[in-house]
Length: 365
Image (tube, rainbow, N blue to C red; front, side):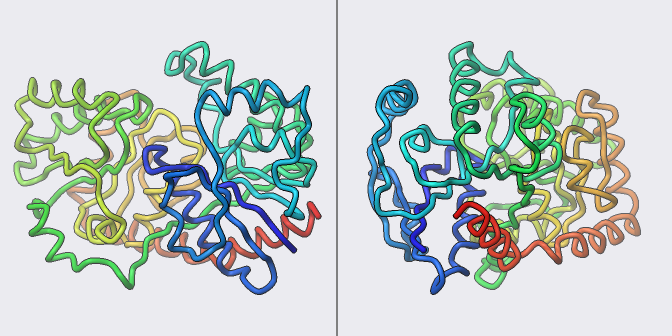
């Protein structure tokens, strides 16, 4: 079987990029039974290491818009050599194929926080999703929460939707040594860790407020953040300076995948204060590294965390601070959360993900 995979996400796309890496890692387990070709934009070199055949495609916002708008007029076949297509993200190119395909719809955040999107962005998402959903042979999502949203907002038959969470891509065997990582980043001995881009829904500002409620009682504790400077970064760190926490809240920028396991392992806990998540990749990564988790009690996160973390109200700095305080003061709780997290992640492997992809391909061809 010849299968094309649209791999268009880049690191700036955050979790969508991480998901694509995980998706391709699972596809690598299908070598020998499936002939996979990646369709990647020119200049995107992030997927070469997987060793798949790569065909280059032209990509731009104008081209994507044209593909979406011309789909009802011109039914060109963009993938004539493939038997089926898989897309880890939604793409207007899927509107220009008669091949059966499955794609992943990650979330419908614009339905919950329209103020975080321009009117054009909201129109684009609704227009593109509705048309691609109408043509898709199968729809993939990562949580039952998103599955319910797809059914509710787009009236998609639930029998066409498959819920498949993606395992984390951390390579524990090739990870950098914790001691070396601690020295290189000048990490404190006690810190909460939050790896996220500075998008509004990631809720960095309230996390800073919550940390300020703990700072005096725990003078050795810090907050370590990753992600590129941009979006809400300046606003967040203006507030950090106002609260006098510049020495306690560290931003270490973009971090390589090799360093991530050590950053989790050294952390006192992962904190995920997001206002919206369809699934949180850092939570799965923390589980794998044996790091305690405290997270927002919103959307799909209670489903993902189960009893392996502490949940809080992300709209309340006090609630967030209380959860963080309980982790700082209760060693037995930290140990129990580590144990539960490791148990919860045990079955989430790329071999199993590959089996799910194999099953999806069998149902669309």
